[in-house]
Structures are given as structure tokens and as C-alpha cells.
Length: 212
Image (tube, rainbow, N blue to C red; front, side, top):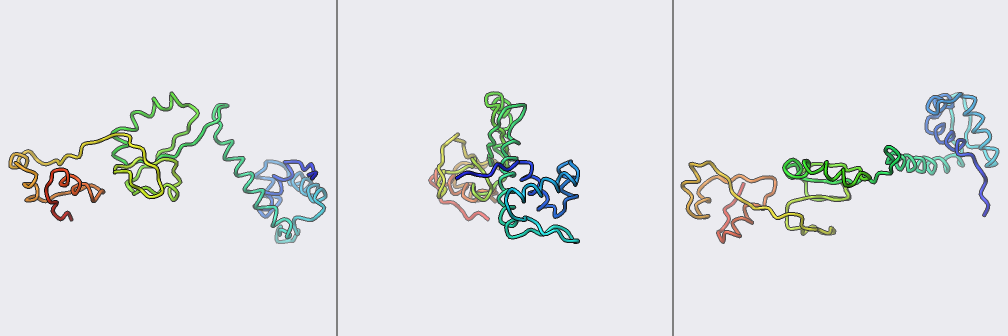
């Protein structure tokens, strides 16, 4: 099927005019004259063989045909713009959205980013720091780095590092501790992860007290 040879500028003029609801505002956004916008839209309507606007004293109102065409053009121009935004200094950049817990970002990842950028100049890395459980779809992430055993439904987990889980206390309290059981005589604090003490006492073969 042969498609009409429609100028891209005319389609762009229509998209902006429909979104702005005014030839004048469309001309300002496109940085052309109002007459140029009007001329392009008249030519587009002639090529398509149907009006796209009702011109009224209160502004532009889309016809049924214009209503059908406008969202498709908006989505298309947005997608083109998003791709063009990835070009930096003439190089195409892939965007990688990474979610990471704050402690890992500040204590390990950030100092290694310059080396990563040097090795992968075509990747635009975006870091999102929070301590939430993994929800890649909701957060718009490509990768998430979390502490845990990697048992998250619907996700593929790859181990990166192993880290020790060590209780910390003041020197005075430490001198009084002889066995893991002795910890149960003190108030225990935890991080955002509610299972850390349970895991530690499990490996210490000691019953875990109730942590509040």
C-alpha cells in the first residue's frame, strides 16, 4: 500500500497545535510564524483529504480524524525525542537504571563509578538509592542491588559479594559477652532488615529473642 508523502514538519506542526490548542502558541513553541503553522496545517489537511481542526473563536477543536491522529503523533515524537536525548557528543548512550541500598552505594559503589564510566562511556548510568524491597517494574529499574538471599519472586538474582554479619556494641558491653546467648540479656537494635538478627542467631545455633 502506497503511503502519502507527508512532510514531517507538517505533522509536527499539527501535533504542537493540537496540544497547545492555538496556532499562536504552536508558533512560539516551534519558533516560526503563526502564518507558517497555519500554512503547514492547511497543506496537511489537503494531503489527507479531511479537516483536522474546527477553527472557533475560542480556539482549536479537534475533529474525529484529528483526535485519532494526535495521540499517535505525540507518542511517536516523544519516542524520537527520548532516543535523541541519548546522544551525547555524537555518541549514542544506553541508559541503565540501577536501584541500590544507600549503605552499599556510599560504602562501595560510588567510588567505583569513575572506572565504570571510563570503561563504558556509552552507558548513561542512573542510580536510585532506597532501602525498599525489590520492585523493579514499579520503580522503573533495569537492575537492583539488595542485601539478601536472592529469593525474590519473578526476579533472577546473581550473587555479587558476600558480607559478614557482625553485631556491634560498646567496649564495656563487649567485655561482658562470652557466648552468643549473652546478647539476649541486652537490648538489640536492627537495621531496616527485620531478619538480620534471626539469621545471625541461626548461624550461632542460639534461639533468637524477640526483636522490636
